Length: 168
Image (cartoon, rainbow, N blue to C red; front, side, top):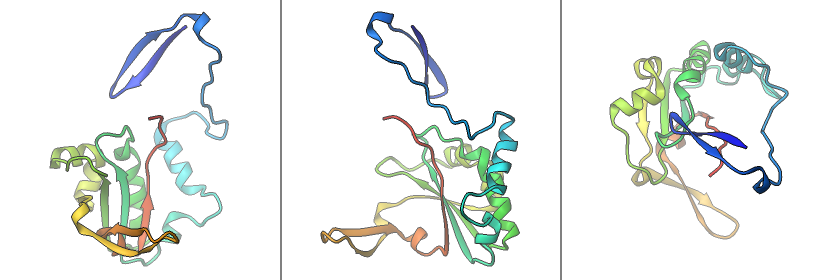
C-alpha cells in the first residue's frame, strides 16, 4: 500500500507491503462539510457549540490574547486569525495580543511571526513570543506542584487558545 505522509510543507511517499499492514484507519469527521476554507472558518465562528458567539463572549473586554502554535507546528494560524480578530473587534476589545506558544523552542524572528500570524494580525495586534522568564506563579496543584503562567496571559481578561491535534 502506498501512503503520502505530510512532512512540513511537503509529503513523503512511503510504500508498505500489504502483508505488513494489519489495519488501516483514516481519521474522518462527518460533522465537517467539505468546502472553501474561508466558509468553513466563518461557519465555525458563527455556529458555536454550547456557547455564545465569540463577539458576544468577548464583549467589552479590555485585553484579549490569542494563543497560537509556534513555527514547529503545522497549524495555519494565518488562515483563521483574521476572522477571530474581526470577532474581537466587533466585541470592542481594545488590546489584542497574539502569543506564540514556544514551549522550550527558540524565539521567532519577526518574519516568522508574520508568516505564522499573517499581515492582518501583524498590523492590528501585538505579536509576542512566550518567555519562560516572564511567568507568574498562580497557585499550586493538589500535589503541591507550582503552576506558573506567562504574564501576558495572566494579564488578559479574555483568552482564546488555538492549535491542532497531531501525532507525535
